[in-house]
Image (cartoon, rainbow, N blue to C red):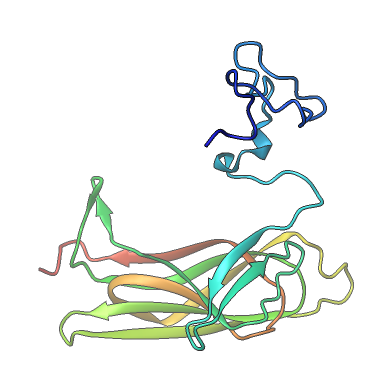
Length: 202
């Protein structure tokens, strides 16, 4: 069946469909615009413009119903509880991962953008090979209203979270957890500080 967008005598645009303004067709192939704008191509990884909406499919695993989510880039207060997982940290010596080393973690350097009053938890989980168990330390982070200056100031702030006593084990991993409607927050950087054993524990 012939394509209704092309005339029967060869490739070319449908004369009944005018070209987009400012996008003249290419002389070598009239069907391809000569000045394609990259911001309109999804493979560039970005969306362009102020009058669009970013949507994504979503499946509720509890009731099995499908939904379409519309992202609100101006709202950092999630209406559902959630979790963000950082990678497991494995000591590296001479650019070689050293499995089996115990790591003693003593400090977390947390950078976040101040967006309002909020509460979330920073959790550190390590693996204990001798007992084949995991242990987790949780620290609640409260971003509170500050008098005497603009709040929120939308700037990046830093908190140094000490881990006393130390939490020791293999493959330490940091997770961020939060309850529904716990306030707007945005972590921009997180660094887990610690010392690894000099020799592998294997």
